[in-house]
Image (cartoon, rainbow, N blue to C red; front, top):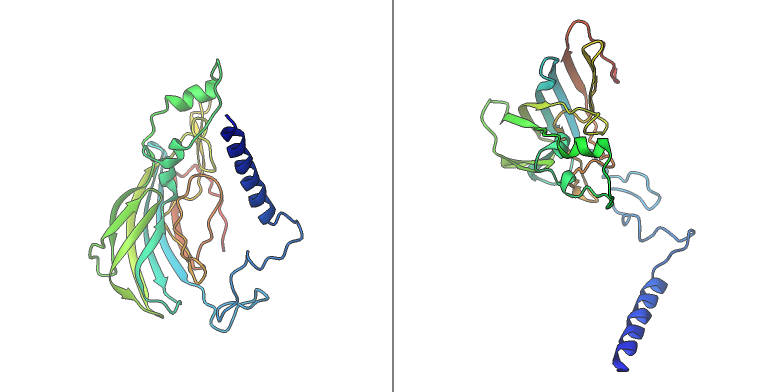
Length: 255
């Protein structure tokens, strides 16, 4: 009968030792938090002599269908590999897939146990929405099909040969997706319907397939997008055409 208290004491002692070995100081040094200085970045955090950034340039033709609440897009990505590494594949972010029927975002959604349910939760529970990107094709500069694999909110492009330093890869992607009702599925993007005026207001974000970051610290940043937080993006130039109904006003950023 004395074994159980001894076992519990050992567990508590182990937990105490772990807590003691974790530096909780607000003034702790950041040596273990920051990447080790190398040729790409200095110990002071400045770019090193071999520092690089990838470049992704976009040419896009976007169309809003106000009758069906859909966005259609065709884009050409010109990706330049400025890294010293030959890239055997590329990763593209498909952020809208967080709203796909099989999205992990829905699977990790949590909530408390209650004896009643709000109207908003009830609408969400019975909201049947076919979200996520519908990729019609991925082609190269010669209009030849390019093999790809979609893993939830990430798409991997398999290259026929490694993309060497200084080389470019052109990808043509045609896609569309259904816009979500923001009153039923929240988030930064969606539409609101005004019954009295019989019209729609659209707030559109994270709306096109975009290149993931490749750097010397992590390699490819290909973590899944679950609806919280944001990702870094490679720098690039954008040439975007947006077609909307004549009575719509478009607000956007850029120059």
